Image (tube, rainbow, N blue to C red):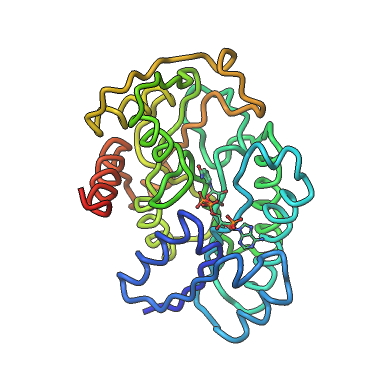
Length: 284
Ligand SMILES: NC(=O)c1ccc[n+]([C@@H]2O[C@H](COP(=O)([O-])OP(=O)(O)OC[C@H]3O[C@@H](n4cnc5c(N)ncnc54)[C@H](OP(=O)(O)O)[C@@H]3O)[C@@H](O)[C@H]2O)c1
């Protein structure tokens, strides 16, 4: 049985991870933003001194990609500097540190899955600030594990699946970009892999559901699973006109994950379980 602190516990991954760790009878200390602001180094020190956990898992982040472009100071503070504080304090207290990062650290120009040691070249403030967080944490503490994931969705989260679910209830056509490719990832599947990674060597790991698709294919699959009559139409990124660039291709390779004995189910299976659980919870 291990003692685990989870920061960002009010977020979609944080909530799921706390539940999964509790299911395994670990002693979990969840901290929402209100309970622990990760930009407050003194509070981090005090918390680790009191709790003395075995692991510190940071799921907290400034995740609104568009808002990061204008609130640059907060993006770098929360995504870049706070992971440094967490890593420094974890090192001082000899606590293993696990930090969650993103596919946005890559430029999206590859056409085959990104490996952990491929060159990074983020194109957005969100991606740049998250990369800084990775680098700071690793420099501060060699025992850091960085988990890069992508296209995340979890229960009660503000995410693509929940947006399409809402739109699928109305007769309006749903326009979705068909020229950006990635791997949709269910927070439960990511959380299960994070639990396994607690006992693997530190370093960077890519963790997503298996397989890949475009946002259009993802939306079409959601609509199909919901047995909705909604019409999903493909549009190009250019036609859609997003304010902040998104990687064209951000599929992450599982080679390293698999060589550590961890395997991910495909994204369609994750989605089916997610939607079935949502359906149960809504009493349908
Ligand atoms: N969502 C995705 O598609 C995606 C893709 C790739 C990687 N990731 C990474 O995966 C991780 C989890 O993402 P998620 O989707 O679960 O994000 P999320 O739902 O936005 O959760 C992040 C949580 O962090 C909290 N937070 C923000 N600033 C904080 C601070 N200063 N101190 C403490 N907590 C703070 C947020 O609180 P408020 O909401 O109150 O601000 C929120 O509860 C993040 O590292 C993210 O970068 C996400």
